[in-house]
Image 1 (cartoon, rainbow, N blue to C red):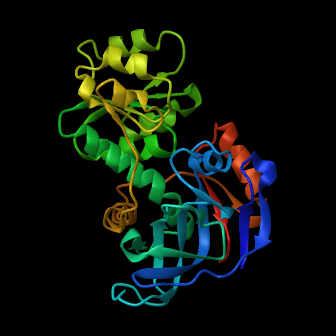
Image 2 (image 1 turned 180 degrees about the vertical axis):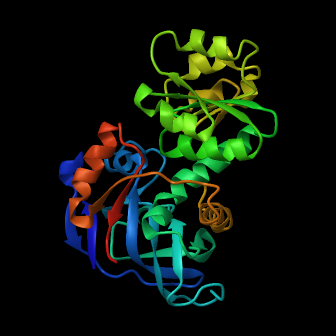
Length: 307
């Protein structure tokens, strides 16, 4: 099968399109014929060796953790799926090796969700990691009705979903973003604030009494987050472990087919929007990584593997 791999840690120049064996499908697993994958910053951070202290890699590594496609085969003891089912998954494994930028990937069945009618493969592939991360962060912060929530990087892949989910819970949301994305946030019902000098002052003007909870999806915001928070235990970051050392939380998300099913249902009924920036062919994954590293896109970057 065709797969985008790297055989050593490095920058995008280590990525190459190669032929790899089709993965076996074991008990409790499904093998997915991949139609779409999606790019996340963790993909190129792993490739650069930035998470080597946390995860083992076995080379060559097939990159990618997000996937949408069709069930091609099921292993023993998988009654909940059948060949031909449209599915999506956050396909992270304990060892960094068999990713989703390939024609086939094998995933634990309880990490997989069926894709409802009307939800495109592009959207289904773009949702898993960002959607589950947004949901896990809000659960960690116990965001609920009446809370005033500050989201750093509210127009980004995770922040944009977290803002919508928080609003649906009855929270009011203030989100930091570049000025070019302020209208995007206003359309959701989020109060936008620009990054940069004077951020703490701007936030205090909006919420003089402080914020009930703070979600950091950018990194580098610990000082201002603590300064404007009413409760240091209700600050959380996906980018900075110092939040945990300061009384808050550093959030990692687990693969979870049940929660992903719930999120896909929200997409299907129109209550959750997933923004797509651009779609690249599998062989152009290097360009997709570069665009993700540069930032400034208007949504998730999707990889087309097949139709």
